[in-house]
Length: 356
Image 1: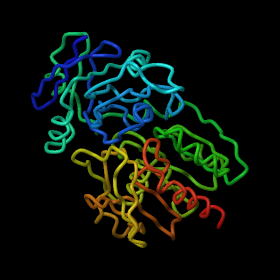
Image 2 (image 1 turned 90 degrees about the vertical axis):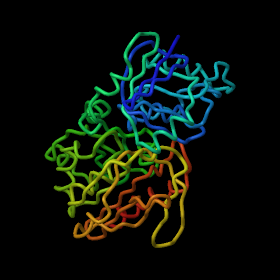
Image 3 (image 1 turned 180 degrees about the vertical axis):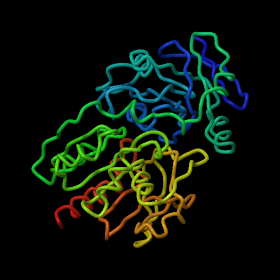
Image 4 (image 1 turned 45 degrees about the horizontal axis):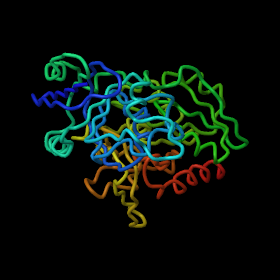
């Protein structure tokens, strides 16, 4: 099949289409991970985005389903340099092409992904459209699509009904803004009694759970659209501990008076350096976000910046002892990515609750 990728700046590229035929649009972003495409493609934080891999070869170890971060592929489409149709791994059950076909999502390979990555780094993340096996004016479709900030992407990835993951420890209400399974696995491993609620759950319903803490998850899009979650933070701040990862950090900060902005091309990959301001230690982290905090806007909010990105100085962690708040911009649970901060973050959550 022929695949055609179009960008809002007028770029039009032809390659080889695979997966399911169709025409889709979304924001084109790149990720620098060299493995873990199963995890990335099923990460709800990529909802609404066309994901391009800088690593040239995709599918070499197949798809097993063992590392999915949700029940389905969340990226709108896949862009890569090359795919492998004869995977080598004893747990592989299908090729990456078959996976996309099963998920009803298109992909394209045979493109100069290095050129596209440099273009995005220089010009910023772009609106894009992809046509596989069909005729379409992809450049015009790319130009016409709305900004990702105007889209409600969270409702497409949050759970529909509350559910419980039993544990003998403190009770945590997890606001599902598009949570990865690996985060829930880490919280469960610590023994917490977890109640996961949809993103639009009213505060009154959360209060019925009598939580010892509220946890704000990762998720896609602009944090300003998470209206109910922001209301929850305002209600519970200073009453019970609040924790957050990625989008969760941004929501906590917004609720407490800070501001966010859209990054030029976001942080997507498993090699982002984060410097801890107290110890001076630099951790290598997994990240997937398009928005960040405005550092100066934290003044007067009782939130303290504790970690910064060593590349561009963006805020990577915030804390408030008076309000019992702890949140990080990166993904300590990894999947995919390094595990440098896994125990540090989740042990801190445990210690905070056990110390109350």
